[in-house]
Length: 302
Image 1: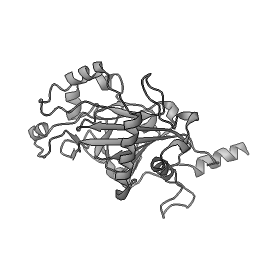
Image 2: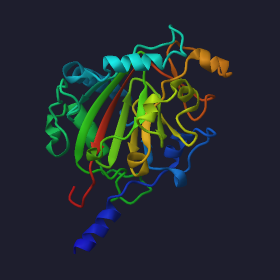
Image 3: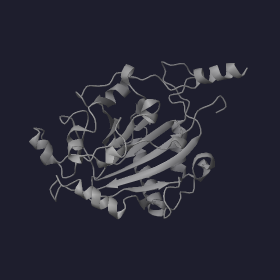
């Protein structure tokens, strides 16, 4: 019986196959070409996960939580170090360095813990209704019409963590890293207020932080990196190798001047992302909020 239940669990509770939507959002840094499902390391993209008429409400909820529980995660020594890494940018091009976070996971002594807790102590009832609604939507069992009724879009277990991050002034830098293993095997990133590019790289800390950021901004961390277009309101789901082996981050960004010198014409006064190649620039807005939902393993008893 146990063997049968294990088999059924693996059969019934599996992520949907990679599809053309995923392929349309992932590009290789080596040549800017799309990444087919056969080469996808575990990235699924759901555009419009947050509907247009919900965006303001969700962003307002996130801002309120940041005001109440948020803390900067840039220490004075970090700021001095990161400032030095932006010496290739002119004074007017350099953004204000900032990194705010809300989480129920203990990370530092001066951090007010979010009331929903973390891991086995996570309490979904303590989430604001707006965030709980999004988490339930991610776990919904609805399936595309061309798939069996019993197969979920994403096979997600219990919610283990909710973390909110904010970056302002076009400073979206996020050095490639792996989220803690205790968060679970499924990481869902919902982006608000600005499009950006999330990069998956085999390069991780400490090198992803200490390396030449000017070179990274123009060429990425490694030629094998993969770029994921994360538009406003979309959900990016990381599982498999994309969750456990490949580090995810956001490059410092390139200025209008740097793009112009590379033969790419843009307008705008904040740093730009690029998607697969410099010839595909992605314009940043001044502020971006990400809400990260981490889920455990699914089971037969959902």
